[in-house]
Length: 127
Image 1 (cartoon, rainbow, N blue to C red):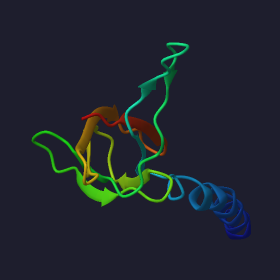
Image 2 (cartoon, rainbow, N blue to C red; image 1 turned 180 degrees about the vertical axis):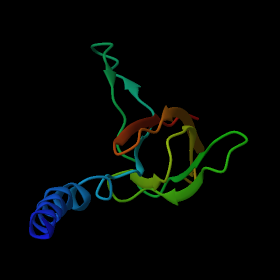
Image 3 (cartoon, one colour; image 1 turned 30 degrees about the horizontal axis):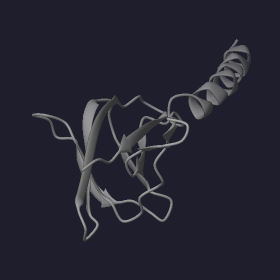
């Protein structure tokens, strides 16, 4: 009887072990944000079509939640992109600003951060 209980215990242990090792702990609970900042769009005088803006490297980006603890600040890279992550889902506001020397351009947006996902945001700067 003891031998049978020991065998059942060993079998139970090895059947539960994979579940304990491969569930729960590996789940990514962070929320990722990728902000792309573009300069203001222009209108082609010949066709009237809107020409999208170009990436704006060196733009200051601020991410925050009204009344919350979510906050990040940084500068866009050479491709006009700023990446950050947070530990919990939230609805955040994003502000971008750059002083070009000729004018100050700014823009804003808001997004919902989703657990385990990268959420894209595009900000078009204007005067």
